[in-house]
Image (cartoon, rainbow, N blue to C red; front, top):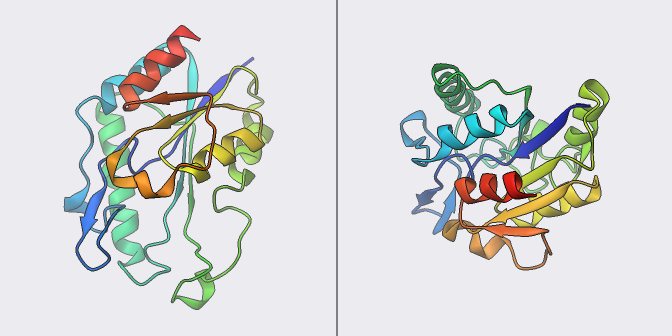
Length: 190
């Protein structure tokens, strides 16, 4: 049976970007701001070599909040996807939620079913790929990631990304990791 690793994007795969307008670290809003960690590609390839299907599950509300354009968000994804292709890393699926309940763009300002901590995207992946829940993982840097994975029965790893420290503290992950590289080591040992 397949086994899977679900990964949050910002703060796990790529670096968060400081937004001087909000005073917070956030997802990149422009393609030139996308910067992977030095260990990202190597770590993702290692997960694939261990036989895991890879899924990206990410809340991306910046367009809904009026912080950037949907074209910029798509260009960032395209650049990320090209990095993966160039390094021969295949993701089974990319799942993005563009909604936010406090948005400015009317059609995206909703209480949706796909925004983490909802596990809708995990359920969709399960329906399509039939992976072993007991052998699968979710790696994220916020409480919403951990709650998402736990509500679906996945083992969870919380990445200790400094820029997102104000968005965690309420969850109890199965493991804590310094970064994605450390998380992959935890998975390989468990």
